[in-house]
Structure formats: structure tokens, C-alpha cells
Length: 133
Image (tube, rainbow, N blue to C red; front, top):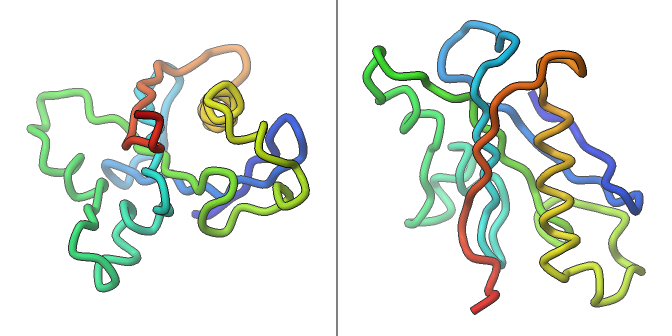
């Protein structure tokens, strides 16, 4: 299901949690927050835009292909500020694209997908390059 996270400065970051199975996440479950690359959007990785791009990857299918004996994470994809359906960033200026802001956004997305405030899930943060080379 699609949701939006409000970042520290009010920017809305649309996000979607992909499930490795039909089961609901449990306390302490593993979450992989995946950040798309520069000029991309979450749809390139959630399977919804495979027809638009030859480089798209359905991360949910990748996770489901892992052996059942492994701990399959739930994958969270989101539209970074200035990308996809994100909004509220339009008047913020270039400083909001500093890696510190983008990193804080990713941490806020991860925090919003925790099972509960009392029992944090384990998180893996990763993704594609935003052009910081």
C-alpha cells in the first residue's frame, strides 16, 4: 500500500512497503529501505513501471526468490525529494539536496516503517547512486 512520509522540512515522500510474503511484518523483522538513483523514481523498482524502462527491477520478486531458509526482508521503496511524486520541496533551494538531507529522509522513511516505537525492526539502508561521484 502506498503511503507518504513527512520529512523534517515538510516534504512529502511517497513510499511503498513490498512484502516478501502475505504475512504482516512482526516486531524485530528485517526491513530493507531502498533508495532509487538520480533521475529515477520508486516505480522503477516496485514492478509498477517495468514497461517504461529496460533497467527496471521488481525488488519484490527478487526478495521472493531468496531461499525460504533465509530471513527475507520487507523492502520499502520511496520517491526521494525532487523525484517521482514527492512534493513540498519546490521552494526549498539547492541545500535540501545535500547528502545529509537525503540521508535523513531515508532514516525517517525507515523509522516510519518500524513495527512499533517500543520494538524497533532491524534495517538495511541502501540503493543506487544519486550522482555524488
